[in-house]
Amino acid sequence: YSISWSTYFEVIKWLYTERLEVPLASVPEVLKAANIMKLDALKKAVLEEKQVGEKFQKGHMKKLLHRPVSVVLDPSPAYPFSMASAMRPVVKAILTHASHEHRGSPRSPPLHGDLLSTCDLTVEVHNELEKPMRFRCHRLMFESRAEYFQTLFASHFCEVGAAGAVGVNVSAGSSQSGSFSSNTTQDSRLAVDADKWSARPMLTVHLSSVSLLGFSLLLEYLYTDTVLHHEVRCELNEAAFRKCDTALIELLDIASLYMLPGLKATCGSVLACHITLGNVCSLYHLSDLLRVDRLLHQASRFMALNLDSLLYPSAPESSALPTASPSSAEGRLTCHQDFVRLVRASAATIQNREDVDTIPVIDDIMEALADIYGISKEEQQETSPTAGNRQRAKGGGSTRRGKKERPAADKDAREAAPTDSLPSEPSTSSAPPLPTAASSKDERQPPSQPSERPTEPAGAASSERDDEEDVQEREGGTKDRESQRAVYEMCASKIDDFLCTLNLNV
Image (tube, rainbow, N blue to C red; front, top):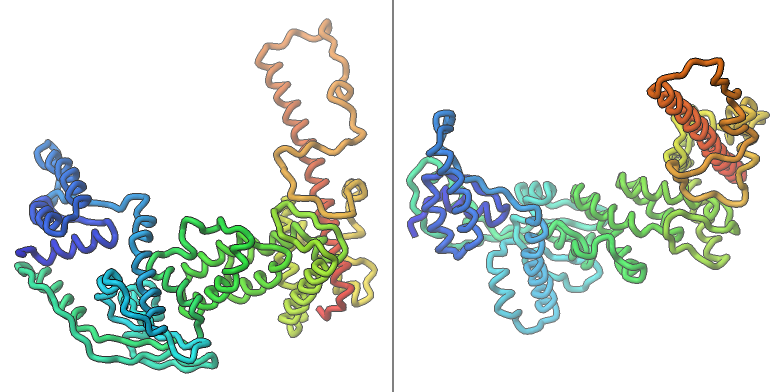
């Protein structure tokens, strides 16, 4: 068919991205390509945009245009989901074909052959298998989605590490290229690029540090930009999640190894929705090691809301978040022991930094508590538990900086606060003020004497009422803030006592 390379390029770009931009003069050729390829959706969208462009050309705005009007198509909001749905059968075909080939089963159905006929990359996964499993993939998906593989394929190097080897073998391959007319300089450049791509060799990549399940999830992400299907992301029940949490944790390692920040963020989002007392310590350690910020923040917040269950193995569990905490005494003891190991490991990272008076995991928990109870940075420094623990270890009289100088109002509010377990996350918008000995509004104000005062305008009376309401609101906010600060200091005191029992050299 007589279709220019520029038009063919735009149509192919639309197939992958739903983006297209061509001059109005090239619209007939685009419509011709759409008819040949049976792209009814493209044809309909181009005709609609063509009508809009023709109105601009015929109207009075023609004089203001410095170049011919173009037809521009942008992707719809649902495009990422439709693209993922379209690519998922390809992933399924790759996995099915590899499984059949590994078991020596008969050839895959014809549909698999059609979907895999353009594959130019073979990935061999050697992990925990006597015979490696071969996956026929598309080199373009690996190169465009991961810079690691782009560099690997371009340099043809072999990287050997402690976990195994990642190698690339190159074997000659050929494929047929179509014939298209070329009339412009751009068409010539595109034709050269097409010849270069058509002559690309077949590559074989050996991966020995990835499990089959981990590579399957990696494959799904590279092709569909989703993990565990976008329909069920963050909607797994606990039983289903236990079957895939190990694979997701492995996928975090893979994302870090192959420099895939998008995959790392996606795994962190899924894991953050399924934090429990049984896995919060391991997830915190992993997120801190791999720098998964969202998962680290959620794990710190979860520990702050379940502080008693971590500090005291026999303490009653209290949480504002739905958890799957162990109900037995052994389960609570295990959670406490995990937290002790986490704190010791975190403290060990700063043993050679005596001038830094902090433990990273404790800092993250205190920051989460400060965010929950609305505590400022200055107030956090006054109640630093790690600083107090160090002072007590040296024989200081006070367990925390600023404890002796705490205002009397804070002391009274602290004594009124419950001490058996931590309360759930407060609601600053609806929490009523604590009961105090303050008198009511009518008792605070002297009785009015309307006979001795001139009648005030209605606007002045309204302004006075507004001022009174503002004063009451500020007083209520102050009392609520004092109560929240008292709870925050109670948490800091509990952490302080917990750190003293560990005898940490910080």
